[in-house]
Length: 452
Image 1 (cartoon, helix red, strand yellow):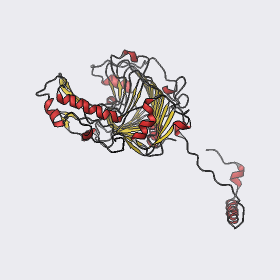
Image 2 (cartoon, helix red, strand yellow):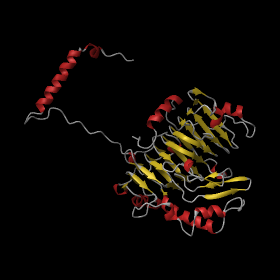
Image 3 (spheres, one colour):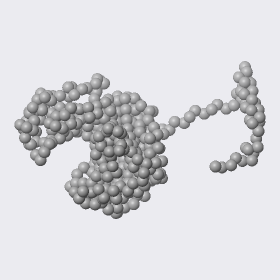
Image 4 (tube, one colour):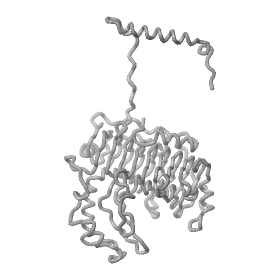
């Protein structure tokens, strides 16, 4: 503790009272009729313009090269405040690359028509699509293991296309999409950054990208599964992207509340954030991923060897709360995973957190994991044809753990042991705090409405 200066230490309390009384007297005189103001006006608090902010130097992979500036250079004619889907679509301008700042005010529902009328699944259904008829047509006990085909599958496709036209919203290059204030929500949308560069998405809640028309995918070797269409945010062939202070969830229609058909949960949601198809140079910071099954996928296939040298992603100061798996799952990419907070509530479904897949090279530093007693450290990590993971400073329920050593000790032999040699060392990052300190900071500061 710094000692007080002699001047401060020797000043008597009575002196402070006298000074306070003098200030009060001057203030009263200033209020007399005809008196001039005795004190200057207090300046208003400066509110940061999040739309003009750019990614800080060295803040993860998205800071590589020219960095990520989004639409910060937009002229006044390309700064938009949008309050409904029609205004948002107009501002996105078909994914144009003109520098633009789009500010979301309040809640925008993507499942609305051009007049703002709310649309439900029945409004999209066409061609005679009917879920009971679909289930009857493709029941695996009678249909078998073949891919669905015929009238009901064609009707499902046509219906799905009508919904996709509404909810798939494309963000072009040189764009900043930012929420205004603490309550900006984009509901029901699948935001897509396809073949675009230099994009920022900040301070907005992305909620409930609900698929009205999942497709049944049989599996001749056992049970099939339901496949959904929409990721809440999908980066496909995207470069230099900063995702910051975003909250992503299934809020409104959690999959756990959906029925079971053909022995499988009738899923309505895909990923919260998918980074695929050669996307590169991405930073995801101070965001919350909540109440979801498969949260973040980096790399979409074991055979997509064109992803080599790409999929460079930094995830820091994010919270994964009640996420079942993929936080993240990585193929091919160089991923720096540091100062994140993982929380598994009592009674929540859980499979794993960090997925190590083909040629992935993940560095996991100073992350905090909190889970109930039936979950073990060995459950935090899962490998599919993975080979390496570098880790240090991670904590599980407040205790330091070596994820790599424990995984290898518990490996049943179905997968090879992992090595610590990932072939690279992260250099683009801010200060790396202890896992405990980071967990407290993330609990206070991550998520939409907390930027700035």
